[in-house]
Amino acid sequence: MNINALSNPFSVLSPYASRFAPLFRRRTRVSPAIRVFRLSLALLASPLDMPAVAAPLVIKLGTLAPTGSPWHQMVLQIGEEWARISGGQVTLRIYAGGVLGDEEDLVRKMRIGQIQAVAVSTSGLAILNTDIMCLQIPLMFDSWAELDAVEAGLIPKLAEGFARHGSELLTWTEGGWVHFFTQERTATIDEMRTRKLFVWAGHPTTEEFYTRARFRTVPLAVTDMLPGLHTGLITALDVPPLAALLNQWFGVARYMVDLNWAPLLGGVIVDRRTWETVPAAWREPMRHAAVAASARWSRDIRRLGEEAVPAMVARGLTVVSLDAATRAGWRRDVEALYPAFRGQFGTAEDFDKIMQLRTTFRGRLAAR
Image 1: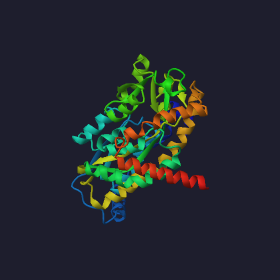
Image 2: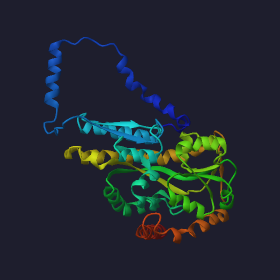
Image 3: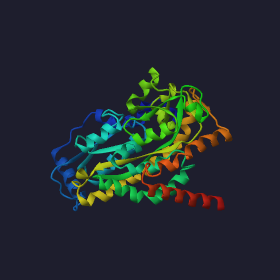
Image 4: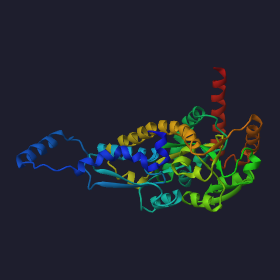
């Protein structure tokens, strides 16, 4: 995928327009004998062990992912694989771009049965299982490799937490490294404290952390972010570069602090009641298909996240580099809050496990 095309999120759809061309071709007349022959071949080729289902199953999935974005392409791939695995009996109907509301709205609609699945960020996942917030602790991780090492030791436990709350976590997803985008040049943490910073509404732990860090927070839905920037309600936001590019937020907040604040993670969740209506023979293949799609697109998301920055710079973004002393000031003030929030970003056990896994990884890295 060409990163320059992502400056217009809809332009990435053009390569797929050829899929629809056959619908407009002139149809040719087929004789009844040929139709019978084709039907016989289809019956012979169909698997005999296909589970019987009472009726085709439609799973409605909501997501904020912009149409044509890598996250949208990922769930499209999942839907295609589910249709193949089920012989067309399972359809994943996707509502992208926030047309069904913010992530809190999506989770609520899944709980009451209006939709049956969501593809959401950590903000949405935390509504179902607050323990996921342990992977969102600011300035905890220095690299993807470090995050991968820590995740490997925590994923089984976190997945069990969703199951206890009536949800089936099919796969993890990634959004990229969160950075601060501001309307005025910002380098130090004290300068950031003077900005009006967007925080995701409905997440008191995150808001409390930012408040304890002495940031000026403004809780909003993501769908209100762009209007908030235009009206001055907010003057700063913390999002991954790829999301800033796709949603055009960087056009209003034209400075980016060169600091990996935290990784933005996510997941694809299906309501347990719906998942259990899927024939048992299909569930594991469908789960594996979701994991494979996530792995494939996560590689692209990491790469595109890096390419998004020069793409935005070419369109007027200014990257604010930090010297060692400024970077140390951010880390000093943030890490001073860790003891107070041990047990709030996930459990205290999760926090201790992360610290232990991170120390082990850094020790191995230093020994090389």
